[in-house]
Image (tube, rainbow, N blue to C red; front, side, top):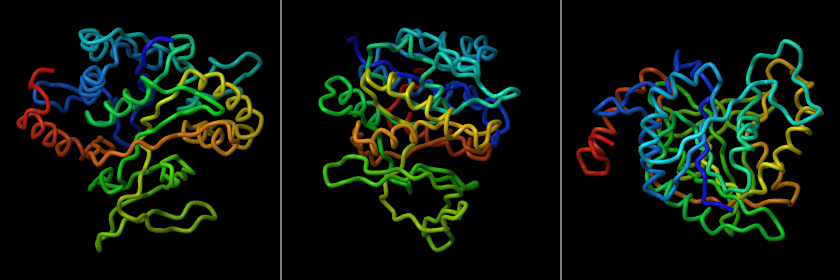
Length: 306
């Protein structure tokens, strides 16, 4: 087994934002959000990154991300396409929409075989504390009677935007600090009275989320057992979930982890952080993110030139 590998999910386009937000500059010298993730991951101990991209985006990513990332760590590319699937599976005819974040991670299986992996979104600013905690966990994690995974949990109030609503995986944590369950909540926002609320979804009514509740921003840590288990999950998704909505159904990473926990096959330790998450969910978010990064740079958390 080799050291932990950083796996970056970068195949998606920012539909609400209106463009390829992963390569939009936010730093004082034109840095993108992912430059800071690579920098923080390298400082934490990661020496290799695998970017999951769409094949047609390789040139843009190599020019704006890959070349700079290679100054700090080894870089490889994995490709997410709807026809890249476990043997015997076939995407529905006419399907163009990606099959979800769990499928994206599975697409990196050859490049990460035998390695513990940390999985992140390309367009989220996670902060140095999160990468340190993730690397330290993965550097020593060992499966025993169950798979021993982890995730970084952010306090919900530290993940909101003033420019619209967000969706978050809201976590329940047991007395041992392990993830007991995760529920996707949509249209989360801070109300005028300060409460944090979410919208109704199907038969589930609208509700409120208490401050301090941990939420997932897709910063997960997995031992090498995850990719084989994920293939089993993909086969189940194709048999049960995909037929319900062949053109749009997706297999999400939190769902894959939750399934393994409910089956008693895995645990996921919640590594808590009080750090502020930053992201450009909407175009209007960019000035605030740039201002926050400029402030951290002025305070010495980051050099002006990474």
